[in-house]
Image 1 (spheres, each protein chain N blue to C red):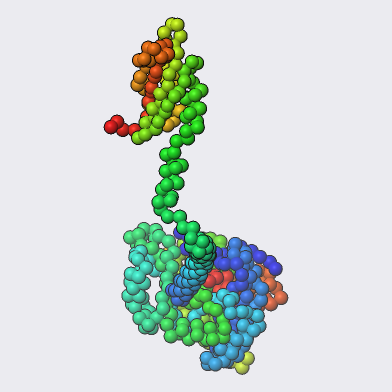
Image 2: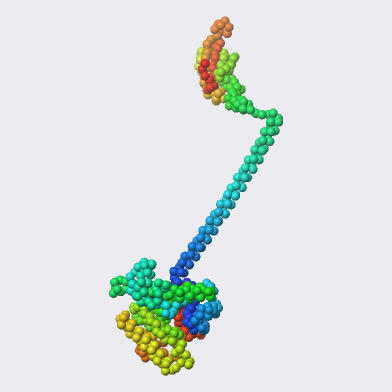
Length: 200
Length: 317
């Protein structure tokens, strides 16, 4: 086969418009076909996505229904045993957990920091106020006020005591009024209040 | 001014088909899409093709012999009295306006109904200024009924027609194909010998396209039982017509220096026609052979398949 470059020739064509129209029409048809397939594909994908979402939602619903059923069964079991916990019980429990005072720790703190030769003889707790009374024997230096002040400072610094009782004050520190009975004894009283305490 | 566009055929197979009422000729070309081509096969089927039925059968035979499918591009041309082609200077207009204006212009010269004809044009390049900057336009016109008839028959035969040319422009393309597309400073002359009418085409790179039909019944003149004296007279008459056309062209376009007279078509076997033409025009005369030129020597028959080959060469654009 011998090949050679093609010459440049006149390119008149009496059916040019006809063929151009056909080519345009073919292009349009192809475009329509592609768009049609594209839209159909998108529609199918949307259907699949919707189906999958519905399937997932149904799964969630089934699980939740199962949970509700289990809870209902549990409730029925409790109802049968008459072990119904009502609102007041829950409030009481919360009160006990949140507002209760662990007295052991407080009493340990009061005893731990108590100076030598001093004793606690009475304590009471009323209206969020703790009153502690006691007596002691001062040293020859007569520094009982300093000793009591230091004692209260130690209590203030002790977190096991001060977590509940934020304020402490010395109410009384005087010698025994009856000079015939134990004339060297010093009586004292201090009070501690919680944060919710209100003066009456 | 380069009058013709560069060939850019799509790769594949292109078929050129032309016919008259005695034969259908077709050429199958392989093109690589980058400008290279080769003639793969040529076919001639002789018969009586005056009737559509026979013509349809002939086209079917061509399709079978060339082994064509419905996807192979076919290029054909229209010929006859209802076909016209000319080159004229014309101002550039928009596509729609241009066609309307050309139709109005052609009504002055065309002898058949322009309104019911199909038109195509090609702007060849800007004018040299002598016509007020108008462009040179090559126009082809053919009766729509003739076009539809040929198109219908070819499509009915299962052939996919991609381009329809007119005979004079197809002959001009044959000239340029023969010159391998190279520029020619002098006009070229081609004479297509048909069974009833011969077509003279003169075209040059720097001179206008010209065409003229001459009544020359080649089928009668070259018939075996034709009167030799009558034959001589008719060939002489054709040679004189060709000579007159050349003189007319020289005067009108003020161009001279014709290179040669190239013959194509049927009935080119005898030496009488070439002798007379050479004597009358004073130019060397030879028969074209595009198939032979491209190396297809086995089926080479000078002049016979040149039109079909050039139709295939021009492609579907």
